[in-house]
Length: 200
Image (cartoon, one colour):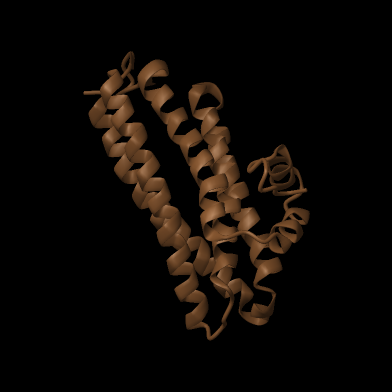
């Protein structure tokens, strides 16, 4: 069972998304989830996890700044960065959902907005979990590969849940990808500036 109101997040949702990118959307589409449930059981814990990884990296692991020795932020700066990342990631997901919905409607298609919420939230889970790898500089590149996997999930999620797009599907998919890349590039640009300033 993908989702249960008695246990919220289950290991099944993670394994389905990570190991069965096509099959998982069948289960996700069929599950009755409200926007509040998506936020409480899926957005909150995974965004908190990603923000916690960034806090640990900045405060305890450190980063090699300007090719010099490894620098670490003080506890307060690291905490402020983590909280800011949490807020910005939630905002990025929310504004992405709104823009994708508007784009779909501009193509004269009408779908329940919950489908877009599911698409963005569940496709983002691997990328959020991938933040774990930033704790280990040697394999930090893996997090970038996982971002690509999230776009792969978007592709199959749209094919399953927006099945009537037909010949407009590829156009819609590329627009959605551009929206997501633009928004998250902007958000991570802000975070990167904060990251560097916290090391000075």
